[in-house]
Image (cartoon, rainbow, N blue to C red; front, side):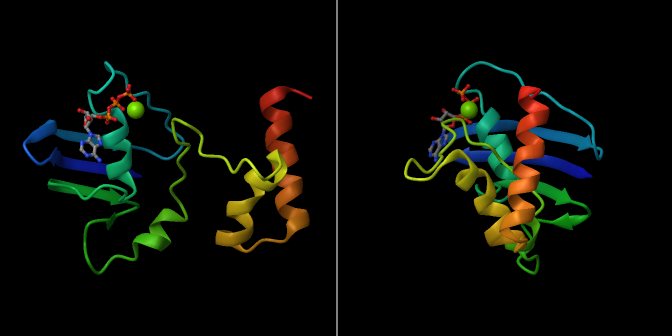
Length: 128
Ligand SMILES: Nc1ncnc2c1ncn2[C@@H]1O[C@H](COP(=O)(O)OP(=O)(O)OP(=O)(O)O)[C@@H](O)[C@H]1O
Ligand SMILES: [Mg+2]
């Protein structure tokens, strides 16, 4: 579960997430965050895996406070995926190499397993 408590985020004087954000997202729940460009959607998502330091409040991933210095943020990040707006794919790698890179490096699964999973996921997206 992701639990957000009284989250605020400012960049200097710019208070981007100024109203306390409180939300609980259960496992397998699908949530859409909508709002005008520049309203702070990406900033909010970046706060959920520690890519931004939180100005105030708490974010708990499966009960672990990600801003707590004692928490292992890299371990938490192995469970929090994020697809960036500009995708940030490696142009010198194939599609398969791009999608299997994280499972190989982070989860240390075999190349065969990673490719099998990659094909399964791609088939479920494209229906082939
Ligand atoms: N690293 C940063 N330093 C300073 N200001 C930032 C930084 N990142 C975002 N901002 C500011 O925070 C505000 C919210 O930006 P954010 O990218 O979160 O909006 P968004 O809702 O995702 O917009 P879009 O729909 O265009 O993707 C903007 O005013 C932006 O300029
Ligand atoms: Mg955005």
